[in-house]
Image 1 (cartoon, helix red, strand yellow):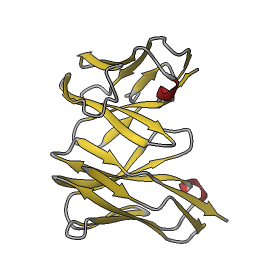
Image 2 (cartoon, chains in turn red, purple):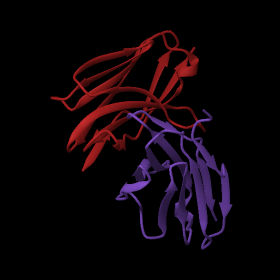
Image 3 (tube, rainbow over the protein chains, first blue to last red):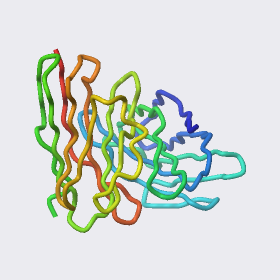
Image 4 (tube, rainbow over the protein chains, first blue to last red):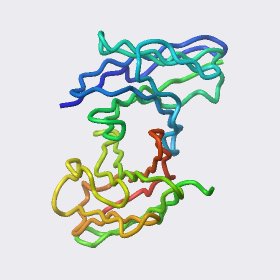
Length: 110
Length: 111
């Protein structure tokens, strides 16, 4: 089976750095993605890690450790617009069969 | 490109009625996915297609749900008969090389 765990809620201050963790149990693990979803909106793709290490895209970075079945999303220089839910998603048996985590609701406060 | 298009955006129906949700993927994308999102169960993959062929429908909850993709530019998800527990937001997504692009979703309410 497939399961992913991430914290349900995180609060951080504008301008700060926040890390959202994700642990997974995925048979035939292929890679880990992160998606952002604002209230009432659709998920949008942020990043994808297939190999161990850090991937950086602007203010967002994502890390993967396959040996620890663990990854995280790092958001720097937080802005109010970053308030949203963030989902980790694992891929198995190829790049298309995906299972989403339960999501972490990030609240950025002034 | 206009992105993934879904219709209707909102649907309210009575229990027992047939519901059909529609999706137009991004042109050139060869994968199409149907998801359901609820507060209780989160975001669930229902079924996905590759080049119009269903690849994995293990997430379809029961026989009341069916999905088709008659051509590369159109897919439907049908629920017959609908039940109140089917109330959710249904997303369609498409992809070409991994990254999935989601449509705006259809909010379904079954009373």
